[in-house]
Length: 141
Image 1 (tube, rainbow, N blue to C red):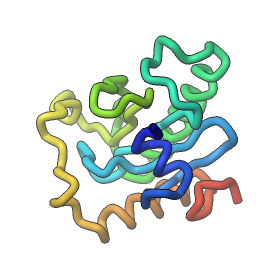
Image 2: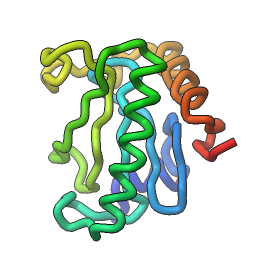
Image 3: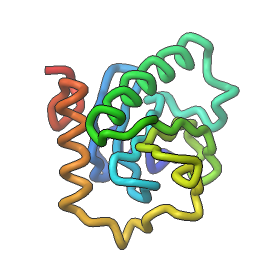
Image 4: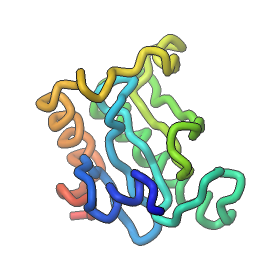
């Protein structure tokens, strides 16, 4: 059975995609720590990050690096947070998000999906796409 992330990647579920290549996709988290919280996900369904082929792991991190720089610029924050957690969905992913301090890393503080502001989510996606030079499908312009 496909994971929820595969369904977003394949367009079966809606998602605010900010980056797409043949092997990596990045989209906004529906339960963000802050507006601009991105999940960097391999297209291939792999549950644990430690099971990802080294070449693909390198690509995921290269994209996370690019997204992290975009987060810092787009949201005028001192750092981009980077976390590998992955218990919620059995599909490896890297969390990249705006961070002003260690409190911003507390997953107890996520904004529940039913309480996010759609306009703020759309604005965050547009800011990130502008920094990344991508279109609404996440492809480089």
